[in-house]
Amino acid sequence: MLVDRHPAVSIQGRARGLNQRSLEIFRPMGIEAAIVDAGRPFENDRGGARCENLAGPWEWLFEPDAPLQWAGTSPSEFCLAE
Ligand SMILES: Cc1cc2nc3c(=O)[nH]c(=O)nc-3n(C[C@H](O)[C@H](O)[C@H](O)COP(=O)(O)OP(=O)(O)OC[C@H]3O[C@@H](n4cnc5c(N)ncnc54)[C@H](O)[C@@H]3O)c2cc1C
Image (cartoon, rainbow, N blue to C red; front, side, top):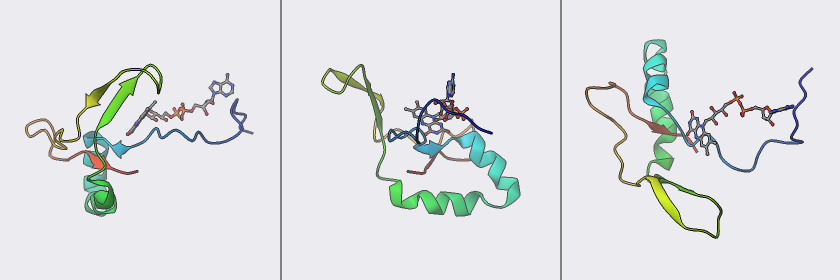
């Protein structure tokens, strides 16, 4: 039995994408390319901001043009999933 303090799934997104390390793990499974393709419709929906509340000041956590890949760190790229 699973008991959760919330009555339903949150309406606030908490998984905008899959990190490079996840994609690295999917690669030898042969499913990396299919997962990246599934995220293509969202590739222009990028960037993340943070604020203390919706009416207050905010700042970019990472900007919309932040790179999806860091060459030398991982052969895979960040994959948008939302
Ligand atoms: C804004 C945001 C963006 C994120 N974006 C990404 C992303 O793009 N990619 C990514 O990989 N990860 C992302 N994450 C992280 C990811 O969402 C978490 O790592 C993941 O949800 C953790 O899953 P979990 O099942 O361990 O915990 P949770 O999803 O936090 O589940 C814990 C559950 O336990 C319940 N609970 C807690 N205390 C109690 C209690 N005392 N009694 C009963 N129930 C309780 C909670 O209600 C909750 O439903 C993001 C997180 C945030 C906050």
